[in-house]
Length: 430
Image 1 (cartoon, one colour):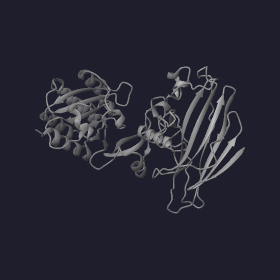
Image 2 (spheres, one colour; image 1 turned 60 degrees about the horizontal axis):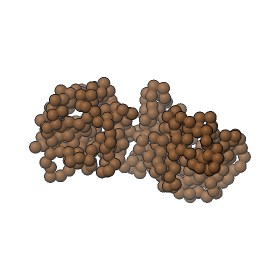
Image 3 (cartoon, one colour; image 1 turned 45 degrees about the vertical axis):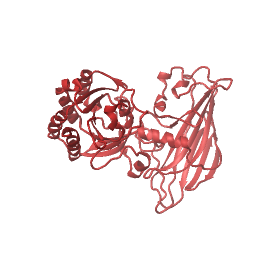
Image 4 (cartoon, helix red, strand yellow; image 1 turned 90 degrees about the vertical axis):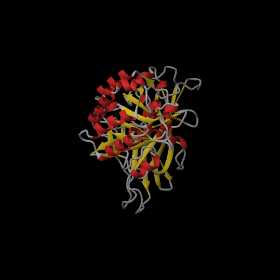
């Protein structure tokens, strides 16, 4: 076993390399004591995979792309959360399928082994991760002669999102050797832009707002949960993990704001929206009625105005993010207000079903596309068949939707405020 001690600004690192096939890396971070320090420190790491043929030429440009059958790759969930690094290779937070939080030793059940560090205890408690990056070649492209995995491991305060320092290491594997591990230097380094970009991408994709007792709570979320895959809480068909701390949210999630009068605010940039699949209104209404919990209705004011009017989304999909909506934000005059601000309110599946029914009753008016209120009905939100239909309504139609929805059983004060805003700005505008 080889042990390297690295002195850092906020603590001391120990890197233990155990010889084997593959080698194993054990990383420990011992925080310096501070009475006002962080009481929950975890480790998160990025991984970059480079595959080479016998001549040293690169094979595959994505994590799934190095496999014989890219569609069957067990690491396709990496591609969903990856960003392009400074050297052109994909970089991603190293995680198992269906994790919520971005930590290697976080609180996801059963994906993580929870090992928090604590700088406030006496003596301080360390945090650690163990990784044996075994690279099997049986399912890989037959031309691959070597696979290199580059890791950047960082200590992070979960309460604030502050990165306390990072170290780098790598593993090199061949068809005859599961992986030789080595340290990438004897000094601590600040987090690279690649790490921060990949970390933010993962966090954006793995958080959602869940309505609990009438309150919107930002939680860790797994987009891959199914009847066969357990989510962060250890249950199948339950994508929700623990709550995201406010300090962390303010640093890493400036889009998903949880406020007193709306659940979330989204912002979109021109040139980065559109391209989503469009379907006929009748089809969208049928799909929304069948799965209201995966639908969303966006109201955009397209009439005369003296100032920008924020658009409104009512949705039964509580993991909604800007990425889900962006393909259905159109750079057209009728949707100009979407590029100012779009506020989101979360409805229960029953309330969303009521909203869809109210829209269905006005299907002919929607299809006629007369009126200053642009309506986009999104279906299969967050899924592979996500699509939308677009129509228009008059202010009187909006009023006829708002009133019965407000009277529907289970409508919370937060939703009432949202409906009041929708009625005032879309239902009584001229």
